[in-house]
Image (cartoon, rainbow, N blue to C red):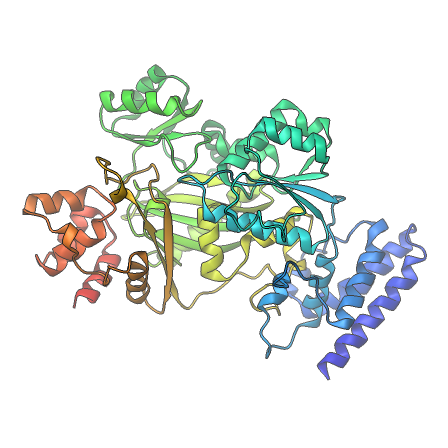
Length: 579
């Protein structure tokens, strides 16, 4: 019965489309083609989103053919397949027993037929060679972007020198250049391939920096290459620490007391005004490279010299070490529809790079007031900055009050985006690529439920825990201390009904020799002083020192909290495991 109704609806829409296609250049034809789609969408899809905003309809010259193609495919129940595994985007996740929603399916079929923007060939900038800070997470996002482009029947050109990646597989991109991801090489490829658009948000910091440089060199304007998704100006605002702080102050979003500097002497002068301890953050840096804490003038002088050798600008800001670190993954389209897909919380307090910290999703220790306060701020920031696609906003939250500060915003797919995608089942990179082509969230299908649109926020009834993996033991004389500069080379993710369950799974996944949250032979301190020093100063093995302190030395939650500043909620959960 349902299939017959779907076919009837599709045929009716196709008939209207064919009729209006004869007069595609007239105003009445545009209205007719729009009318054939919008009532159907409004009657079935999310009323709250669709009644407030009229969906953006493709250009007059393409609307008739797009609707006809979508109606025909829906009637035949066919989808566009990608690669040898017949990947078909959203439909690949459809469950056999779930009846499809006609309106949502129709809109999704329309989104698969092409782009709203007039682009036929797109250059996707990859992340470059494997290094700490750019690895599998950007291979994941780039692969998803290419699949979204291929599904929309757009020719793709990929630049990525790393042959050991999924995205460089011959069955994905139409053209692959194993060239260094630098402005000079990209300029030559653009001159040869002449793409209509370029995507910069799927290759991490390397791709973003190259895009900014190409714009400054005039290459994009010279060859008429359109930046799809977030504009270069927004990328510059989010990466330039000084401009970003000023932009947030304009909308009354709190930022840490800080000063952007370009010389070591300016950094020392700024620290005198702010007061020690301070944290140094590098602009346009990968994986927190060049960042760190300084408690004295001599420490700052050494740190600033190193940081300025890696980046043209650094930010000297007041240290908030010990505060909670929370981040939100936000998606926004060009029509200002905005959703927060996932929020995550670091197990470790502020002072450790997110890539080196245990991360829990969704957040476990925030009150309802804190959660919505930060969510509202994230949406306000993303809208003010003009992000089109996906980004993440990172906060420092005072555990003793509602005071908070924005640490940074990544106006691109990040390491956290890959984690959030897998934790929630919401394909952030895939959706971001579609948004870059001009589609809006209400027009895209939710790839998990296949019965709702992408403007619905996921709701989790489980806990996800991510634990980094380090290979520091492979090197001699290397410091095991972890801080604001990332050192991990990978991570594992585990899912459980409780935090205790997901944590135990994650620990065992990091290394087969780990039995779970329990002491290990390499982490047996010789004295109480050594134990408390290892707890106070984070290393890649601090979790096992916590286990030793709880199980062997009977340390309590309050004592461990004063040493580590880890939230008491997490410590009580660790205590449950020990029992």
